[in-house]
Every structure is written in C-alpha cells, then in structure tokens.
Image (cartoon, rainbow, N blue to C red; front, side, top):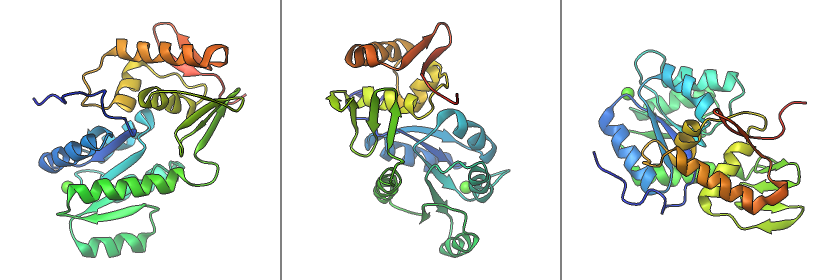
Length: 236
Ligand code: CA
C-alpha cells in the first residue's frame, strides 16, 4: 500500500465522497483528489453512500450512475428528498446518459462522461464547491461569538480575526456545521483528514487543544468524555 508522503502538509479542502463500483476508476479519482488536497472516502455501493453521507458530511459527492443495487440516480434523488444539498457531480458512462439525467432535473451540480481526465474532475469539483460556498448566507457559520466564513476561510471572535492553520479551520468548520451534534475522533479523522490519512485519534486531540487555546474563553468546543467532540448549540 502506498503511503501519502506528508498527509498533513497539504491544506485540506474537506472530504469528498466517491461513489464508484469500479475499483480502478475509484483509485484514480482518489489519487487526483487527494493530491489536490481533498480528503477522500470511497463507497462502492449506493446503499453505502446513502448511509455514510449522513455521518461523514462530505463537501461533495462524485457519483457514478451505474452502480449495483441502488443506482446513482436514486442516490441523488433520495439525498435531495432528505433535503441534503451536498454538491453532486455525476459520472456517467455515455453522453446520452447526461441528456437523460438533465431531463430528470435531479438537482445535480455537474456531469462528467467516462472516460474523463481526472484533472478535469478536480477542476469541476473546485468550481462546484466555489459556487456552493459562495451562495449568500450558506458560507457563514456562527456559534456564540465565533464567526466562521467558509468562503474566505476566516474565523473571527466579535469581529477580530483568529489565525488558524488550514486543518484547524477544517476541524472547526466541520463541527460548527452541525452544532449540538457529537462526533467521535474516528468521524473527525475520516471527514477532515480523509480515509487515506495515517493520522490517529491523538492528532484530533492535538488540533482540538490548539483550537481551544486560540479561541480562548470563546471556544464553543465541548468534550464528551469517551465519546468525542461537539460545539454548543443545536435546536433549543
Ligand atoms: Ca459503475
């Protein structure tokens, strides 16, 4: 197995879920996306994708149409029915499929036809993400006095900027996107660092400690002993 040389050196752009039953294609997609700084999780089935998309909260899904069991179309449909608006890029076998998919108005964000250049996939993905985080309101998260802007990747407390590393930012953004929800170290690792990372639970603890020291008394991060981390908030 090939080890990523310096998993922490690349700024993480968040986790991308690849739903692909062909191992060779998934491997190429994974390689290019992780080189571009994304964490990557691969699901070979639609069922698995629907299950994991809720817990992993990827920033985007690269979704093959032809899957065994539930196909990509159904995966997209069910996500949108559940009000999950995670950006989706469909990967199709033929151009005609794109026409068919467009006709279905599934709420996908882009379409690519196999065979495609993995570089092109990375470009399209970045465009889709820019579009989705650039939407008014959607890029800014607030918990207590802490404001996080996913578009400009900045954090401030009562208007004064807090300097975070890329990874610290990603951890905080991930937690703040679901206030009140508790995430285990494993969930944080797979979502923020990505499946290919060799980081361990201790790495999560170190980043949380750094975040707390930088955010000081305003830190919204809570520890649930033996369970994981969350930020204050949620439905009250
Ligand atoms: Ca397939």
